[in-house]
Length: 545
Image (tube, rainbow, N blue to C red; front, side):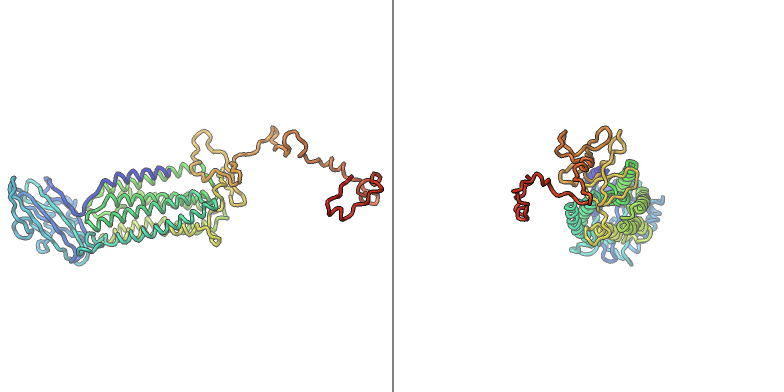
């Protein structure tokens, strides 16, 4: 299942990298409509500027550049109004309507081409308002029956040249570049720390699959941030949006999030803590749940790329897929809670680990949906993107740092969850049997002998911790009566111990007074033989002749 997630996200990333849209909006518009939306941008007050170039044939009626700010846009866009009704929402006094002709406002000059006369318009417009605002740029030609035919180029800016964070960025994106750079550097350090801890755990045979999943989450998120740094850096330098790079970076972050949630639910079920295998029903439930979770994430990104309308300032989660993802995250939290409580009751020795694990990651599970809801309904549109970027990355790194602290292999860490070595493999065979260092569990038979061994996908290690590397599944053979073989080798009796009767028959008889008889038979001792002395014993020269 984990391999499916990785391959699917990588494939989707390669597809999405083909898309790239420039903020320096350029195009050749030909439509029968009299009113057309072009682009949007969040301009700073008195610092936001628009440089434009338009060229269209004079055979078409006068075409107008229309500038809507955010308060009026909802009344104009997709409301069923006619072209004239949409233009009537704007003010001539505030220069929201710029006629592209020889009136002087649009700074247009006639150009003679082989196919007729054209208007060529070049100008720089400065925006002035009480605060940073979203401005929506459209074209209108309400007096023509032909529609619109125009070549255009737009360059939208905030600030002066050389202001890397402001010049090419929309006001709602000013601090995204320093935010992603900061978190990328933090994750570089976090990756080094968790790798060092992983090495220590591996030397102690405690480098379990769940910790490997954690390291994967760290590096996947770090690589996603790396792509975001590249994308936002290029955008700040050139003014062209790196949509494909941004999307690929977010996909790697999504992959990290999926894997981390999977790891939390596995550990709440006791995997690598009190059990080495998952039961087949539990594995099937997890496989189905995370397949749906992954597909929902994929649908969310596809929905954003294909369905989202740039004329609407939408958050990525303002979609059916986004709402479904919130619901699935809460279902995952419910699954996490139930599994953890069951393990906490049946394995009380792990209380020091499971109590803080439960409290913190309950907060972590809910922080994501709460952040999404606040972003959709509370945060202002002109600061939403940079705020959500910072908060979501902060929530993610807090979850990763807490897990690193919780699993540090220090003697003072009472919360350390791993006490079974990777070579002491076990499975739950239907009974909640606690496993610790004093009662290592063994590999049992596969629960489903007729189908594929799905549980083996979660086995940590099949090697023995003994010197001879004998599999723990190898048991000594028994005879037909179920008895273990004797210690003798073959029919030889040299290694056989005497029975109790045999030993009792060889014991010397006691005298009437209860004393032992003298050692040896003195009738057989030569009279000339002196009694053994202490020196003879110490010299090792005594022999019973």
